[in-house]
View 1 (cartoon, rainbow, N blue to C red):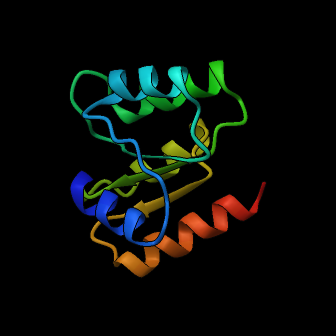
View 2: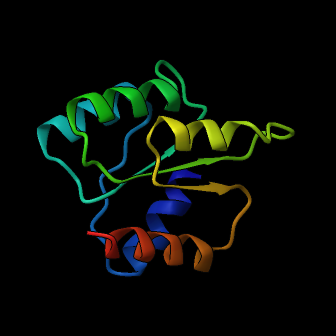
Length: 109
C-alpha cells in the first residue's frame, strides 16, 4: 500500500519520503518536516494513534491524513481525527480520492 501511495503521489508531482513505521516516520519528520503526513492507523512498532499524538505534541501544525482498511472498525478513523488527523480515508480508496484529499488538506494552509 505504501508503494502504491508513493507512486500515485509522485505521479501527481509530489515529493515523497516514506517510512516503514511510526518510529521511522517521526525520525524523518524531525529531520525534515513535510508539508503533509499520510499514515496508516495500524503500523508495526508505533501505531498511527501514538504517532499522531507525538506529532501533535512536537509539531502542532502538522497536517496529517490517517488511513485504515481494517474492518469493521468504524470507530478507528473518528478517533484519529480527535487525536489530530485533519482528514481520514477508509481503504480501499481510489487514487483520485487520495489526490483530492491531499489537495484539499494542502489548500488549508
